[in-house]
Image (cartoon, rainbow, N blue to C red):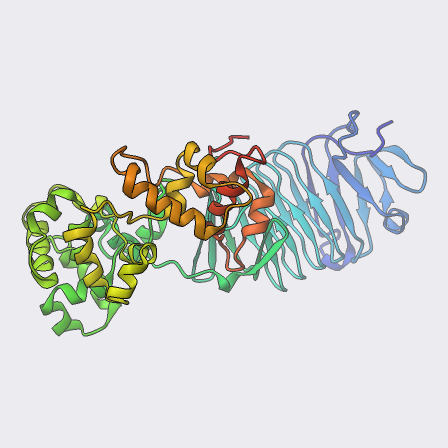
Length: 471
C-alpha cells in the first residue's frame, strides 16, 4: 500500500447535497488509488472522516490507515477541512468553510475554495482558482491561469516579481503576470498581495501600467492603435512583454518642450501631450523624446548636426527626424541616457550639475570623440569575461569596478568595439531563486544594479552564469 493513500485520475465536486449549501457536499473520484504513492487524491483528517458518510468506492480512512472501496464520500459538517491532491485530467474541486489545502495536477482545473483560510495550487494547465471568502494563498502553477482571490486578504504566489524573466503589470485592480520562458500569462483579480521567493509585496506597491505611454513609446504601436487603451493593454500582455518592449520610452515633458505650439496649447498636461502624440503627432512625424538625446544616439547625426548651441542642435534634430528620421525608423535606436552619462563622469557633474542639455551637448560635441562611456560601467564589465576576471572578484568594490570600466573603455574598449550591454540581469535573476530573494526591492521588482554587481564579484567564484538556463 502507498505510504500516502490517494485517488488517481479526474475528479470533481458536487454540492450542495439536498439543495442546501449548509447540508454538506460530496467528492466523486472516478478511478482507483494511486499505486505509486504520489500523494494525489483526497485526505480527510480523523474528525472529518468520522463525520463523513462513506457510501461508494475508493476512500482513505485515516482512523484505520486503509483504503476502502469507496470513490464517493459526503461531508455533513460545513466547516470540515479538506486536503485534496490531483494527478491529471481537468478536475473541479470545491472546498469547505474550513481551512482547505487543494493542489491539483495537470489539466485545466477549477477550484472553488469557499470560506476559510485556504491554500490552493492549480498545477500545470489553464486553471481557474477562486479563493472566495477567507485569507487565501493561491498558486496558479505552470500555464495561463485566472486567479480570483475573492473576499478577505488574499495573496498570489508567483515564481518571480517584475524582472527575472517575468513581467508583472498592474492595470487598475487587475494584475497580469507574464512568464517569458513558457509564454504563459496569469490574470489576477481581487488579491491584495504578491509573494515570491519568500518576499511579500502589496499589490498597490506596483506602479500602474500606462497603456498610452506604452503605445507612444513604439512607432508601430502608435500607428496601429492610436489612443485605444484597451488594445494597448492587450498588446502588451499578449505580445509586447514577451518581445521585451519598454513601457516608458515616450517622454511627454520633452514632447511639450520641443514643440512650442503644444506647450502653448497644453501647458504642463502630460496626459494631453501623450494623447496628442498618439492621435496626431506621430503622423506629423513629431519626435517623442528629447531631440538632443536623439542626435547623441547616432554618430552620423552628431557629425552633421552637432555644432552650435544646445537649442540649435535640438532644432536641427527635430527637423531631421521630421524629414527623414521618421521614415528611417530611427526612433528604435535612441539609446543615449544623459543621467547615466553624468553619473559616470565626476568632472561633468562638477561642470554641468543637473543641466542635462549641457551634458548631452558635451557628449555630442566632445564626449563621444573622447571615447567617454555613456552606458552603465557595471553592464560593460559584466558583458566580457576577461573584464570580470580583471576587475571583479570578492575583493572588488563597486567604486573600483566602475573606475576600472571607465578607464578601460576610454583607453582600449572603444577601439576594440567592446559590447557595453550584452549582459542580461533579467536572465541572471531568472536562473537563481536565492538571488531573486536577495535582490527583491520591496516594490514588486529587483535591484538590478546590485544583482549585476553580484555577478561581477561572485558569479565566477560560485559557478553562476548570465546565460539563460532553460529548466
